[in-house]
Every structure is written in structure tokens, then in C-alpha cells.
Image 1 (cartoon, rainbow, N blue to C red):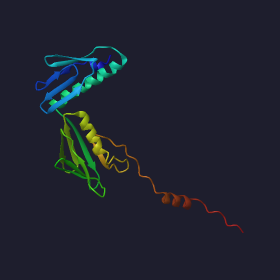
Image 2: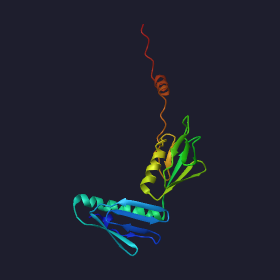
Image 3: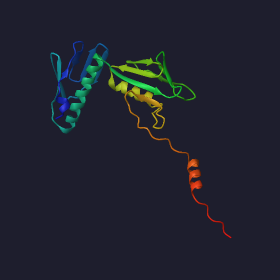
Image 4: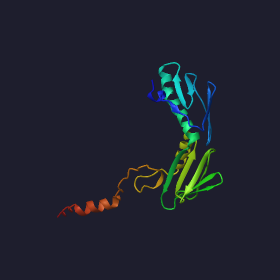
Length: 196
């Protein structure tokens, strides 16, 4: 049995949950989310708590038990509080702006990068280099953040790129040019004696 699956879920006062044996709909302050629940999982609601139970205790079903409990919990948190991801642009000339439903990024390429913002995701730009993403759907928010980040993954030498807030980039020392190493090696090595 999953330890996570057994945990009860607290339902906030402003959240409504409807379940018809297959589809779960969660309504809240920030939107409506829907998910299809497998038949082996049963949901029991009492007052302000939600308990997820497993009907058949098979190995395949126990894997779904903790997963769907977490998905339901994320849906409730999303519609009541929203999820937030912050991205930082680090690099000379790197900046971001929003034009209508598009996110425009200047990342050192010869052209600006244009990314369309999905529905139910809000984008706020602070100081041209900080991107705040908010959404009630955690999965879509994470996918959109990784899509933005994929345009400039952080590199370990100068630390430039698109970085998650709180992310630590393991830095590397800059490599020495090969010609410099050859000069040092040739200057230190003794010259062979001339043959008579």
C-alpha cells in the first residue's frame, strides 16, 4: 500500500468537487480542472476532507494509488492557491517582454524568440529579466517553463542562460587555450644538442 495514497486531502472552503465514478471536476477561485480517475480508485468525501481508497489491491493498482492521490491534491491546490515558477535570464542583453498572447525573448540570437502563451497561464515580467509564471494546472505550467528554458540552457563556464529560481549551476573553470600550453611546454623543455 502507498503511504502517500492513504493520506487524507484537506478541501479549502472555496473549492467544489464533483465525481461521477470516472471524471473528477474541481472548481475553485482560479479555475476549473478535470481529470479521469481509473475504476480501481474510489473517492470518499466527508465535510472538508477527501480520502482516496483502492478497490483492488494488485501491484499495478498500488502504483496508481499514490499517483492519483497526488494529482487530486495538486488540482485542489491549483484552483485554490495557484502554482508559481520563476525564471531568471542571465546574460548580456538577455531580456523578455509580453506582446499580446506571445512571450518575446532576446537571448543573444540574431532574431528574437517568439513563444505563444498557453491558456490558463499568466506571465508577468519584472525588470526585463525575471519571468513569473502562474497557473492552476501544475503539469502545463511545468511543461511551459521547460519549453522556455530549452531555448537557453544554463552553461557551466559563465553561468549564462535561463535559470529556475533557487537553482544552483555547478560551475567549471575555464579551459586554457592549447597554444598557451604548447608555448609553456616548449619553453621549459631543453633543446637537443646539435650534432657535429
